[in-house]
Image 1 (cartoon, rainbow, N blue to C red):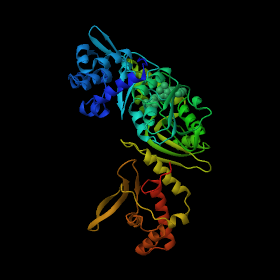
Image 2: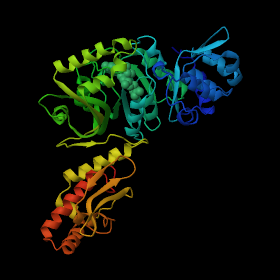
Image 3: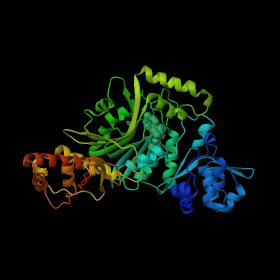
Image 4: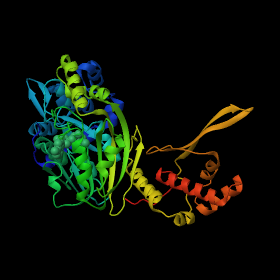
Length: 491
Ligand SMILES: C[S@@+](CC[C@H](N)C(=O)[O-])C[C@H]1O[C@@H](n2cnc3c(N)ncnc32)[C@H](O)[C@@H]1O
């Protein structure tokens, strides 16, 4: 694995990657390297074809992204001698007999370049302490997390440091920890590679390194796979079933300042005789937080065992049936019928707390931390604002709201059979509307109070004033908690 050399020298290497245009967009969109070379995909010929030019970008991508050996002479043509020498000093590549081989993988993420183990080695040997590149779960958490200016942040299970280093851009200080000492070495290397100084990385188990400290923000992309065996430290839950994620949901808030957030991605099981919501209720009850859950997926036990089979058995496809059966037996013995997954944000708050769960299978592809904060503000409004407070308020729709209508031919004309409003950007939201209140929604422009809106509805629909008022209050609460209204951010 790479060796930590003088930070200034590593920074020069990092800058060379950036100056060569080594970005996620360039690798994925321009060079079309959307997949790595996996034997099972039989795609190596295509990836080599796409990286054949004698340019720094092509050759860096071939060796450090695809993990393929490169011709030393060609590489030296594309990489200045001083940088090539530093890469050798840092043991990022090994040169022998005119061939350069990578000793690590380099992946771009936003404005960072991050060194990790070469993941395709998983097809060659079992590496229980493999340190993973930023992967799809990293990307999702990175978009989900709040980028709070001046915050004190804790990234639990930092791996090669992607979330910690991204957060360092806005935070005052970030602590990144991992139980895997190799991960911490990579993370320190990456801090220097990217010239980031307001981060400390420490080896530590779960929340132990946070003892005696409190943070504005804790993030975790923990090992949450519900696995029968603890094979890989990066993904297999170290506690029975979903125990590790449960422990974090219950314990991490103790290390938050009042108003601070804990955000994680995780999975939880559904057991026979219990609703999956009941399991989460038990996680959250008494943890002192308001909780917003973005539920992303749900797999029956067999489908889940199948989906995770590659991680469970990367080397011996001929054992797939046996491993699959072992996993199914493990779930059956523990009455697990399904596994659910998603993102959770918890805000520490004294007093009564709320829990909101939304189904959002496709979270946005851009950062949506501000939308998460807005959902908290909206749910606060729905849960805590009194009717009197709301009646005097002049709500306004966000500009991202659209009405969707379905019309059915009836009685010689088109009759509306479905009306919904959707948020068309950011974190998705959708709300079904009854025709009379739909007309109220389009008038929410900040110029009239809820009381005035209710009076207008009563007059328009010839309805009782009290009934109209109750309907509009209910509507405003639902719109607020669904993210449809302009609200002051609280986070
Ligand atoms: C899914 S990886 C996430 C890595 C990185 N944060 C990211 O988002 O790409 C989970 C990380 O948690 C670490 N980990 C596993 N068990 C841990 C524990 N008990 N305490 C701290 N870290 C742990 C693993 O070594 C691994 O780096």
